[in-house]
Length: 130
Image (cartoon, rainbow, N blue to C red; front, side, top):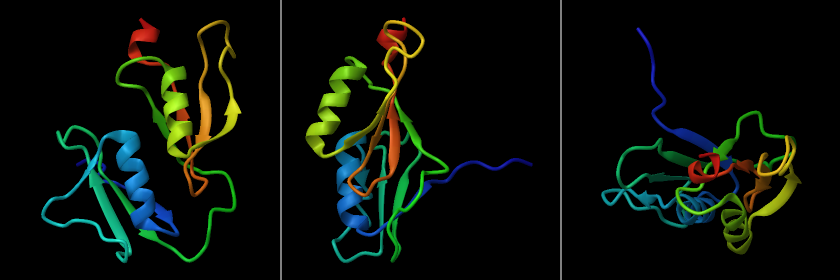
């Protein structure tokens, strides 16, 4: 017997605001039968095509205080890593560490943080890997 990942849970102070932010980042949507609301303690978003793992944002009283033990590695669907990096900065992400070029030109990743400080990485797109 094996298990599968049903969804990824993200602890946060403001589930609604953070779910809205990640909807813009990932192109996800709310469940039309159970829409999110600003006063909800849990907010769920999913890939509209059902191909990727859903996320649920859960309200907790404390803020993030240490490095994530688990994080997302994001790969742009189209375009380049640097363009996606700029888009995420405009959406309100912050740069944590820059590892571009770590193994030579065109390699590496950028560590960023969402509006509540949860870290994630931006990798090169599949086109850049090819």
